[in-house]
Image 1 (cartoon, rainbow over the protein chains, first blue to last red):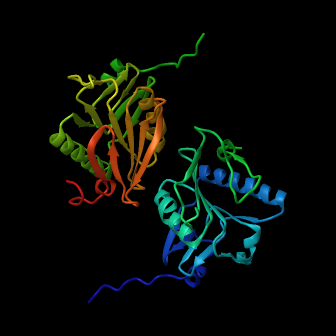
Image 2 (cartoon, chains in turn blue, yellow; image 1 turned 90 degrees about the horizontal axis):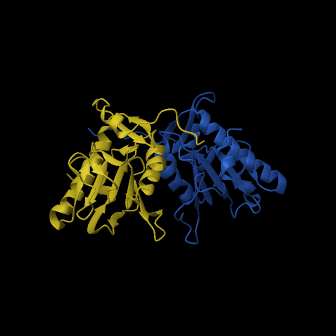
Image 3 (cartoon, chains in turn purple, blue; image 1 turned 90 degrees about the vertical axis):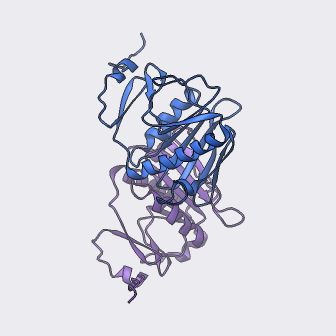
Length: 187
Length: 192
């Protein structure tokens, strides 16, 4: 008798999870349990969310969300730390979630989730058409920016770090500039 | 009057530290203590050392060593790299330790302590003239290679990953080729 392959979960199963429980995501039908964010992770995610929120308010285009379900397919449901949906893509926003690929996704690394964020999620965001993926590394105080190239792949990431200085800018966000020191600022 | 740290350690203090299995290092006189490495870290270390040793057995030209081995850059900068290579014409190898810069240093990251290898030690190796510094990331299965550029400063010459089927090569060892996937392979696979 062969072992019974365990069944993959879908978004319907995912939706039935208790709302007050831990933070789950679904990758290729596998339920992924994420630890609660730690202090350092939280302030970095907030810094970026606030900065993007200020930008969309100023230009009066696009939307910014934190910790909202992003349904990439029935078996791939992620909850990015921060995401940005450009003005032209707002149709993917529904009252419950985002159904489709946001233009920009930001994940802040925690110890123990590096591989998932840097490899598994990068591949998913690339495959489903997220234009830019920012991976924020609080330990090394740097941000890796993956950007879709002409061949629709993420090329080698651009890195902006506290060590080298500089600011995060993006073709998706004309006029936006986030100094790297503001990403990691404690206040 | 220049500011001085309250106490700085020197190599003499360092030699009096206990032999308790932990790794003691001093950088700018500051003591860093790291626990003994985990199984996976040691397996990767072995595979690297085996690959480098095979290279030198076949082509000669240098020697590979591994921790614990003291590398004394100055009296207040003493470290124990995971893996180090000293080429034949480099006079730093002494009976008790290495005095000066190895040609190549490799550090294998430990989760939760990445900043130490990625920042503090990179700066140290850069400052003291190590030609190449490889940072092995077991979690992402990749190797970052820092190499001196024409301006004599480190630059990220390559990031070689198992994901992309990368192969490590270096101008220091012209015939050396190492598939990154092999150093992260399971016991019995890839390399001994």
